[in-house]
Image 1 (cartoon, one colour):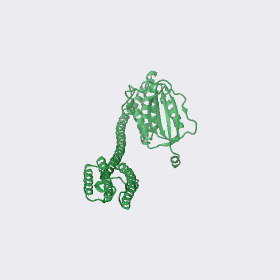
Image 2 (cartoon, one colour; image 1 turned 90 degrees about the vertical axis):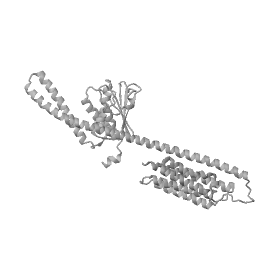
Image 3 (cartoon, helix red, strand yellow; image 1 turned 60 degrees about the vertical axis):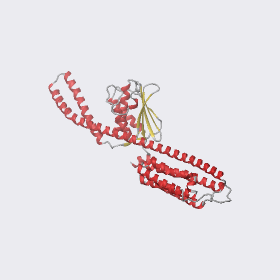
Image 4 (tube, helix red, strand yellow; image 1 turned 90 degrees about the horizontal axis):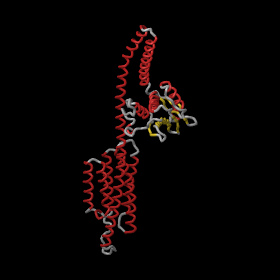
Length: 419
């Protein structure tokens, strides 16, 4: 969302505070001080400010972006209305004339220097005009009961109230603006990190595609040569070694074909009960790593919700099982839990835990806690889960080892019915 949208929203809140404060002060001036002001004219000016504020608040709910020129025009409207109020209540003799500084301060905090200088010229012209042209609050009368000392004290009190109100408004507005700017900076940082991650993924995918293409030719050559060797070498020991090599070459070729099918079916995702997905994953994982062990998973009682599955998601979860199994030879502890919105898969291994030196960088490319790892498995897993609106986090478990926690969103019921 554009930055000026948030600034204009804060401006509407500021106007509400000013309207409330000015209304109370004018009532006090009329009924307690006896100021001779035109209540109807002042009420019309305050009503105009309220109407502009309501229109602005309604406009902020539209899809139109807030431009710098629009924000400047809104501040000009505030300056004009403040000038009209001060004109009706004593001009430059009104201690609240410093209300004209509010549009200037907001311009200096949010707008470019051209608009800021233009606003400075506007408020200076208004102040200079109000030195001569204004409606007196207390018309000069020989019989009025205010002495010069009482009028001076009243002016000093008004100046103090004006200073207090201005400090509160400026502090509140600038604090809110700083908060909005920090939020926008965090959004920009997240977007920058996402783009960097996408670029890294594209680079990694390009390299993997090129490597897969290059590996196809030597694997085919090896397969042909191994077939010729199997025909010429008949002794049992050599034939057994050749058969093993043929099996490994066939596994590599099948893996490349599976990679191509996975890329082709990247968008093919379908809802599946999460407990059934976990059973399928563990069965497939046991075929790949028969030596890995795990205890009977702890699964929440009741009907399991559905999760959007895909080949990439299965591979990402398999990577986490592999990482946990690599960390320790002890059986893994697996827990599956859920609520109405999210699903949690927790994997606890008995390994050495997370090293402090790299725990903050886990999930970034080429950062690994293994001596022989490439540092891309957890990066690919985190990226895949992010694409599925999920996330993965790693913690040091109180009982030792590492706790890997995966969060995935539950597929809404109306989405399932639509499919």
